[in-house]
Image 1 (cartoon, rainbow, N blue to C red):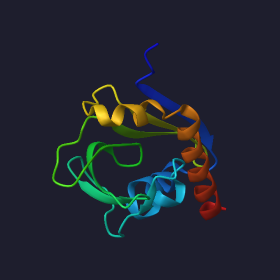
Image 2 (cartoon, helix red, strand yellow; image 1 turned 90 degrees about the vertical axis):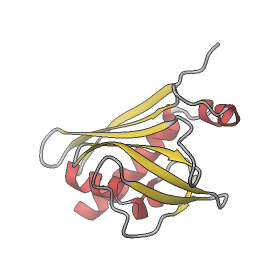
Image 3 (cartoon, rainbow, N blue to C red; image 1 turned 60 degrees about the vertical axis):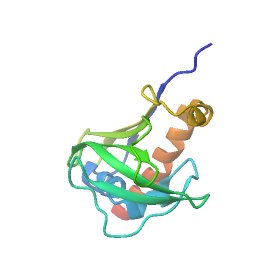
Image 4 (tube, rainbow, N blue to C red; image 1 turned 45 degrees about the vertical axis):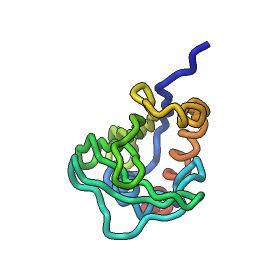
Length: 150
């Protein structure tokens, strides 16, 4: 059976969309909420502001990734395609979508899409990404966002 190539998770967070988005769009914050335990660090000063921005992260295995921002709407949508330094992205995408319910509640959807993944060495890892793993990132993000707003 062919694995799902698009997986996602959604939950409501008791925090403003602005606060949640700031935690996502600032790569230095990402290791603190990464539910895959894949991100070790990201230098400060890389706040994403536009499609075309590239931010760097260091993985727990020491590898560096250049993350190419392909979707961006301030406060609501951000998506990027990771790549090895100075290489084209192999085709997988991480997306965050925020939908304010009111000033203090936000519906957050996190999606991993590997429909365009062309690197056969990454297929096994990609296919092992589950909605539960994405939900773990949302849950950690919620804890940070709620602590800072409370």
